[in-house]
Length: 140
Image 1 (cartoon, helix red, strand yellow):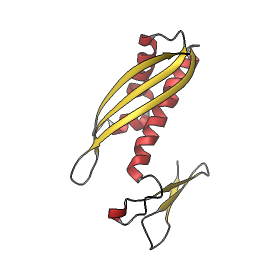
Image 2 (image 1 turned 180 degrees about the vertical axis):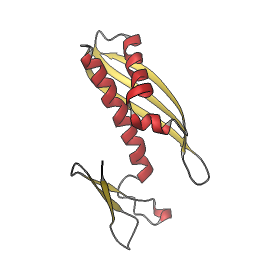
Image 3 (image 1 turned 45 degrees about the vertical axis):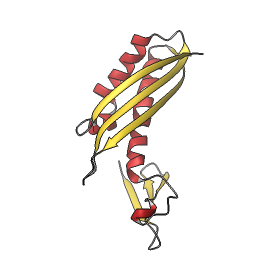
Image 4 (image 1 turned 30 degrees about the vertical axis):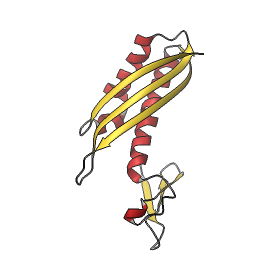
């Protein structure tokens, strides 16, 4: 995997990442850090990527099990250390999974498999952060 990050110039703290798959991702800093608040912060993109990684796993696990999953939302709330390096110290992921006839234990098992075996992002962040999850099923 490869990624190239380019600073957008001396007028701020914006950066553009070009991923190995050819996609662009813009990041910016907070105004108090010299940024212009025009894009997500780099650590927000880490958190978002982790949510995307685990959501991908959960949907794939449920689909492979032939469960009628129709939607998956992950709401993440994270705390960071107050001093540098400001690593994540706790992350809670609340899964709202929509489908027909889904069983709580089956979805919880898919979430657990993601966090214990498949989601490299949450497994990495789990080295510094306490990771917790909750699951809410929505029939539909």
